[in-house]
Image 1 (cartoon, rainbow, N blue to C red):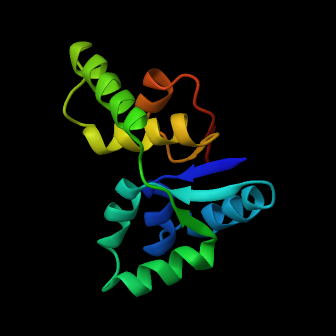
Image 2: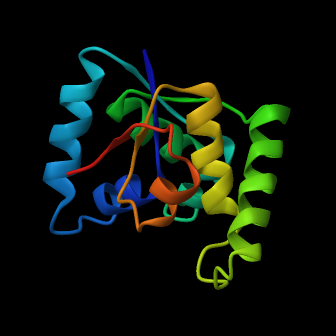
Length: 132
C-alpha cells in the first residue's frame, strides 16, 4: 500500500508547529504498513522551507517519504475536480495545487495524509484520508 503525504502535514512537522509530534507519530504508524510518498506539487511547496535540495531530500528521507511525480491521469482528474468546484461556486480559497495533491493521492496512492479543510472529502469521495 502507498500513502501520499500532503504539504499540511509536512509543514507542521518542519515548522515545529504544536501538532508536529502527532503528525510524526501518525507517519511512523502508517509507514509500518505503507510506503509514504509526496508528489511533485508537495515537494515544491515543501521546498520553500529549506535552503537547498539536499536538506529537503535528507529531511524527507528521515521521514521515509519518497518522491512520486504526478501522472497525466492525475493531472486531468485535478483539473476536472477543480472545474466542478468552481462551477459549484467554490471560492478561490483553494487553488489548483490543492486539487493536484488530492488527485495524485486518489489515482496514484491508496490514501492521503492531510489536514483536510473540507474540499477533499467533497470532491474526492473515494479518497481515504488519514489525519491526526
